[in-house]
Image (cartoon, rainbow, N blue to C red; front, side):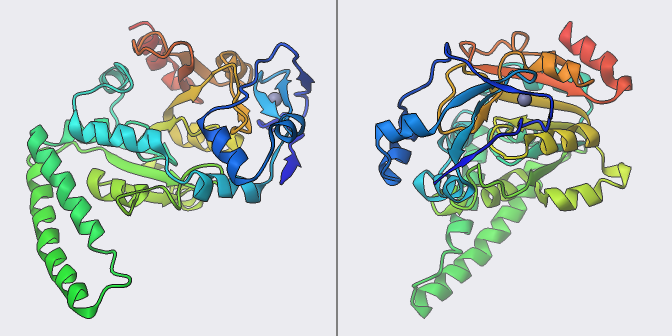
Length: 348
Ligand SMILES: [Zn+2]
């Protein structure tokens, strides 16, 4: 069930780990209770098996012995398959489209960066897709709600397994009408708006994140988002090939609470920085690393990025969001020519 993770998560050979006895470790929380129950792990075994270390250079906290990949996949598919936080943010958006989940982040980024191509990593709801979508549609709250209901019904009607031929036909027929309505609605929603941001959700089937069973009302998060936000879901590998052609370079790339949900954060960050002018990262920096995570970045992360030659600023204070010191927002670039813009944003 457990496996050793000896290397630095950022592939830094010189980054050594040391035990920090002052570290506070969360003994129980919502996720951990689920995991302990479903894998039949007693408190003692749990405590003895998983030990948290601090990496010396990157300052990340890492559980040196942690779940193996098979169990990680189980955690994020069956033990706890639905990403509550993502769905809650999405449902809030439909109910209260003016609610600002990321403080003034979107407003500030939008002011300084002309985003024609926007990419985001792995979760369709935690980041800025809804913010972009909202600026593009000409719609009241009521119309947005109706549009959402249509899409829900349309996707629900695709659930045909176990039905008798009669109901199957009825649902198919009904869906034919609903699809027409959705298409008409889409035209109205995006009416006369010429500058629509192309949105891409980049996925890599990480075992460490909700995905295959992240459903709400029998609809998978990625399919739901694809339909409602008009975004394109792109496999990371395919995106890499596509981006060789620099015409489809991202203006902005978002990693929202997903950097610590992959075994390869290093590769993801490298991909984002290489293929985007700007990268915005939101991450948990709670010093009490929950044992449901393999690793956690800390507040010292911007300094580490700087040491690695990546220009980045901490926007946490600027965006005026109440996070109780448990989250960090960083804007980064790998390209010298965009540093000026980042400085401008930082001093805004
Ligand atoms: Zn390290």
